[in-house]
Image (cartoon, rainbow, N blue to C red; front, side, top):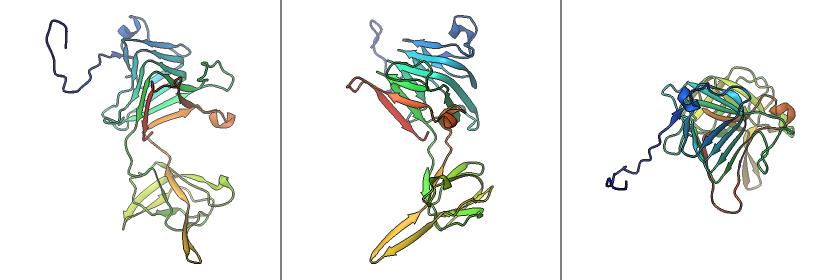
Length: 271
């Protein structure tokens, strides 16, 4: 209902007027943000991130508005977004939706060290949300993980999985350790994939360093499957810490927090 102008049927669709990051008018006719600066998205502003590479921002404060990452028609199109803190307060953060997942490639990287300045309660190197909605949805995959069909020896260059998967050449997979040493888990790049009889065979670009066990064991009348798990380590939407995260053992995190009510919505899939 529009006062004095009658009713309109939106067919249950929501329309948002957006401002493009790439347009100077979004920034008051001035230049767009550069490394080290902060960005505020106030109520009434829907900021569409249509640039391929962002500067390394100090803080992105979505204070009542929306920040939206649009998919591109080319599934191999890569968009990167870098910040130390992203904080959503009474706002919206959207990288795909449940009905319309993000279909090209998006990598959001959080930067920082343990003792950098922090947002109270939420910390640093964080995507934080309060009284807000956060949606991050990547393209669905047939399987994100499965198991080995048979034991593979150290030095093997191919593995067989118990299921058919849609994994592709060039993607990275991880094979879990079946030893007492967890460090025998391995990551490998796929060289080729073939499926037959409901199972998938993957040829690896490099040989396995360790043996990975997979078999059905019987104890008296009980049978137990003991199999290494195999996981797809890539998605088209990635939320990650910076390159120092592993060395410093301090990675990125997402914290959706409210003071004891249901004022937040967080939806995540295939990321």
